Image (cartoon, rainbow, N blue to C red):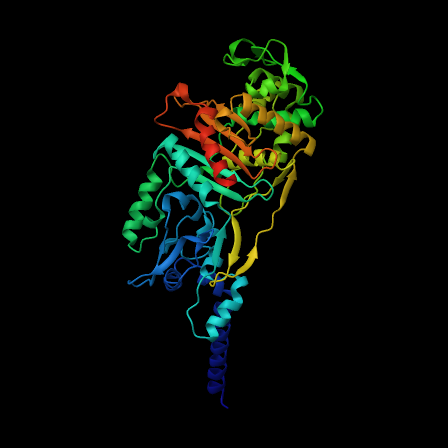
Length: 499
C-alpha cells in the first residue's frame, strides 16, 4: 500500500473511531441530560402527550389525564381545582420535562413526577409489559393522605372567614402517624387554566397569578411563617413542665403587668389586656385559660432563651422535615436572645415565627404522648391498574416531651377549651384540647394575625389542627382573635374526622 492510500485509510479510521466515541458519549453519558434538557422539544412534546397517572384522594381522582383531540393527545384536568390546587399544583408544557426546574415551587405533580409519568424504577415491570405487548405506557397513581371531609370543612370554614381575597391556612394531622388529613391555603387558584394546551392563555394566566399581590400561588401551610402569638405558649408551658420548674397543679407567676428585664418604660411592659390573671401567683390552668402574657413572659425569662429554643427545636423549629411539597420554609426560634427577648419569645413574639404545619405538629406532638411524627402527604404509590406498589411508613421525628408532660399539657389545654379562651372549639360530648393566639404583625397598619391549635378527642386523639388567619378583609381589627375566628374552623375540621 503506497503512502497516500495508507494516510487516507488511517485518517478515515480516526474519523470512524471519533464518530463511534461521539455516538457512545451522546447515547450513553449524555442521554439523560439531553433527554431532560428543556430545549429538547421532542422529549417535551412526548412527555406532555403521555397519559399521566392520577392523583387520588380516597378513590376519587383530583387530577387525571383525559383524551384530547389536539396534537398533545391528553389533557390534564383538576376536578376540585380551588380545593386541592396548593397540593396538586399543575402540569403543563413548561414543566413537562422532569428536572427542568429544580428551584421552582413543586407540588405533587412535580415531586411525584416520575411516578405519574411512569418513569419511576418501581414501575419498571409495568413498562416492560407495555413494551412487550406493544401498548402505550401509562403513568402510575399517587394516593394522598387527605381526608376529603376534613379538607372540605377546612376550605369552607376558612373561606367563610377570609373571603376569596383573604389570606390564611388550615392544616390537620393524624397525631400517631403524621398523615396530613387536610391542608388548605387561601387565596387559591384554578390549575386547569395553567394546564391548558393553549400556551398563550397559560402564559397570561401565569403572569396574572404571579403579579397578584395576594400571592395565590403561595402555599401558606408550609411557605408562610408568622409570629404564632399565644399558641406558642403551649411550647413555653411544655418547656417549664419538662424542666421541672412547675407541674400543671402548681401556682405560676400572675399579675396585671410585667416589666421585662433589661427594659424600662412602655417598650418592655407586658400586660394582659384586661384578662383575669390575678396579682401574684395563680393556678397554671388559669394562666393558660386566660392566655396570661405576664405568666408566660416570666416563664420565658425563668427558663432562658436556650432552654426555650431547645424545646421549640424538638417540636420541629429551625429545621425542615416535609418533602412531599417544596420548598418548605423553616419555622424560626431565635438564637442568642437575651432575657428580655426570651420573655417576648415565651409569648410567641420577638423573632419567633411559625408555619401552620409547624403549629399543627406542636399540637399533634402533645396529643401523641410527646412524640412528634414526620408529616407526610403521599400515602401510597400505585400501578396504572391501581395496585399498591409502596406505602409510606410513619417516621418519628423527635421525642419532644415526656408522656407525663404531654398528659399534663393535655389537661391544661382541655381546661382552656372548657373554661377559657378556646371555648369556640368545644364539641358536645367530646373532650377537646386547644389554645388560641393573636399575634401582633409588627408592621404599621397591618392587623394582627389570628391563630388556633387543637386536637380531639383529647383522651384518644385522632386529629390535630392548626388555623392561621393572615388577612381577613371583612373583619374589623378589634374582632380579630384566634378563638373567635379560628375556633369554629378547627371545630368543623375535627368533627369531620371523628364523626
